[in-house]
Image (cartoon, rainbow, N blue to C red):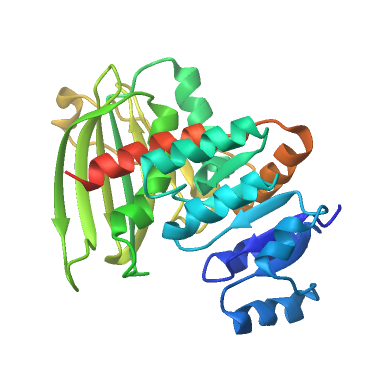
Length: 315
């Protein structure tokens, strides 16, 4: 594989993308504003040293991977797209709807790939859940999604912006349409930032009830989305450490009559070939560069996530 990828940003998450693109044989450059951080990765992976402008001017570089603070996403992504590069930018695409639309327009005008890091869309277990829900041809009664852990607390964004994009992306792909009738409870433990948020709203034309909770001050790690039907509940629990137990069904009809009696919570596990979601995401970006096919998490998908993220945060 040709070395045609540069990763911009070598922090907490950037180092994971650096490792995966290196393992795929596609990494040529790493750039970080902190020269000591940049140099450590150059030494570790035996890479060439280059400035950001030199990287963008390199005709051998097809794809730029942007893993910098969210407030910088617009300017760096815009610069890369305008210099003819395909871009994979981490979530959120930007902090502003008009800026996201500008990036989408630039990508379209220049025939460039614009991909956003909504990782769970590339997770084999969620992919199977999504297929199951769509094949069922029945509107869910309810969706619940929980993303909780003890850290990592951030000062530059609240827990909604940090955690919820993953859940909103998954929910959007299961139930299209607008969100209405939002109720929310925020909790603040350390400063003026939101550390925990419980949200409930209606989704789409069929007004499916969605309950979404995000919390970075919870002792138990919970990453779970459940889709409730009249005859069963299907659950993707990514916090389950055993891959064969991440996706399962509960054969419990979600009705008042049935829930007025004691039910068995026996799980019927669904066999899914586990993948490495991050590596799969990286492969999808490389494939989009090669085939010019839009990724699942393109600019339009990311714009919808951003719209709902802002809507939920502003309630």
